[in-house]
Length: 86
Image 1 (cartoon, rainbow, N blue to C red):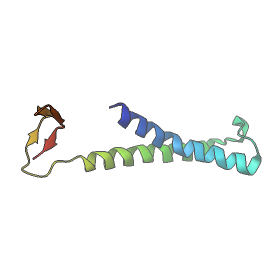
Image 2 (tube, helix red, strand yellow):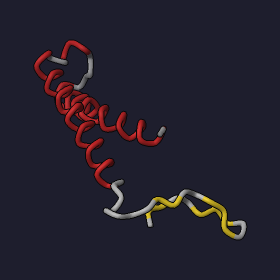
Image 3 (cartoon, rainbow, N blue to C red):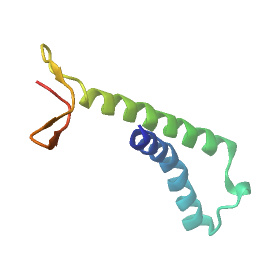
Image 4 (tube, rainbow, N blue to C red):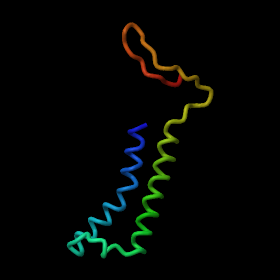
């Protein structure tokens, strides 16, 4: 759960960090006066789009095949076997 939160948080922060790097490269500073409302809205929209795409792609990859059965995590001969779909 924490890992998925951190991944989504990183996806959300990425456009802001990239825009800050662009401001630093072009204007030499990242002061709030350089952040125009239009650019901030575009960066926020890009951040939300990345989070939505990330949520969709991570969930899409965790889908079990049709007709499969979940086998919960268990111990076999003293070895931990993680849960899986069979």
